[in-house]
Amino acid sequence: MNIRTIEVYPYQKDWPQAFAKEKAAILNILPKNLMAKIHHIGSTSVPGLSAKPIIDLLMEVDSLEELDQSANKLEQLGYLVKGEFGIPGRRYFQKGEIERSHQLHAFVHNSYGAKRHLAFRDYLRQFSEHRQAYEAIKLEGARLYRLDPAAYVAHKNDFIQLHEQKALSWAQEQGK
Image (cartoon, rainbow, N blue to C red; front, side, top):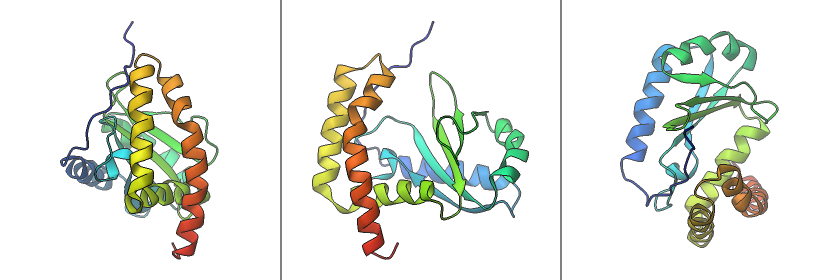
């Protein structure tokens, strides 16, 4: 049985290009009227932040039901269709299982789910002290829980919950 190991790498300058390439592939295969936007999110979208080498994409759509009808097109790109996968109002797709390369999170355009991901990303880009604190937690979690992805996620959870709320308030103050 293969076990997914947690490995956190220093920021790689090619992550934005990997995002752009995947975004283009998705835009090429899905109906044009389905999507509002595709964003690079997650740690690989924050310059200077160490991360697992998995590109996270956020797709804002007009209708999750219409996306569900086109999910087979994402399967053609190698994505596994996971449904809400524990988060109501989201559609989740992952490319690869053990050796995952991309994760696609889809929400209705301008929904709370989309806003919180974008706010957290922008907050970490803006505030180096929070980015550095998050990186330290990620590195510690990877060291302590290398063979336990659930424990790694739990290790980061308190930081994420606290700073996600701060990020949403900050984004609102910025008019985002």
